[in-house]
Image (spheres, helix red, strand yellow):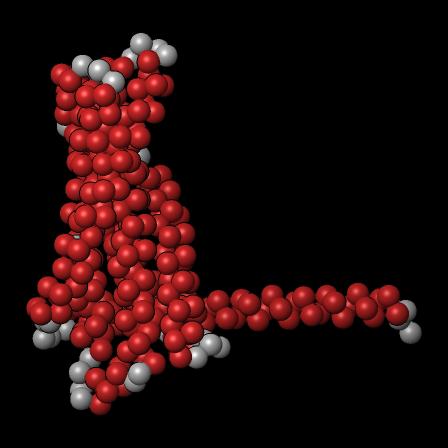
Length: 273
C-alpha cells in the first residue's frame, strides 16, 4: 500500500497534468479558430462584391480620424528624441549627427511601433467592440440569413483599409517626428540646421530604412485587424455574456495586439537587418 504522502503527491501531479493539458487544448482550439477566421477574412477580401462604401468608411475611421492623434504624439516623440539625443551626443562633441540618429530611430522602430500601438488603442478597440455587438445582437446571423457573407461585408474592408492606412500613418509619424526633433534640436538647442538636414537625408538614402518602416507597418496593420476583429467575432464563446463579454473581449484584444506588435517588431528587425 502506498503511503499517504505518496498518494497526495500523485494526486497533485495528476491534477497539474490535467490543468496543463486543458490549457493546451484550449489554446489549440483558440488558435485553430483564429486561423479559420484569418483564412475566411482574407477570402472575404477577394470575394465579390467589393464593398467600396464600407472600405471608405473604414479608411476614414482608421486613417483620417487618427491623423490628429498620430501627429500630436509624433511631434512630442520627436522633440524628446531631439532633446535626449542632443544631451547624449554633446558629451562626445557629435551634435552634428543628431539628424541621422533621429531619422534611424523613427523610421526603424518608433514610427511603425508607436503608430501600431496608437491605432490598436483607438481603432482596434472600436473594431473589436463593433464585431462583438454584431455577434451578441445576432446581426451576423441576420446577414447570413440574407445570403450576405459577413467576412466580405465586415472583415474584408477592415483588412484593406488597415493595410492602406497603417503605412501612410507610420510615415506621417516619422516625418512629423523629424520636425519635432528639428524644433528641439535646432530651434531650441542650437544644433546646426545644415548638419541636421543632411543627416536626415543621408539616413533616408538607405533603402533598408524605408523598407523596414513599410514592412513593419503593413504587418502591424494586418495583425491589428486579425486579432481585434477575431476577439469580437469570438465573443459568444466567452463565459461572460452580453456587454460584459464585449468589454472583456475588447480589453484582451488591445493587450494581445500590443504584445504581438512588440513580438513581431523583434522578429521583423532580426529578419531585415
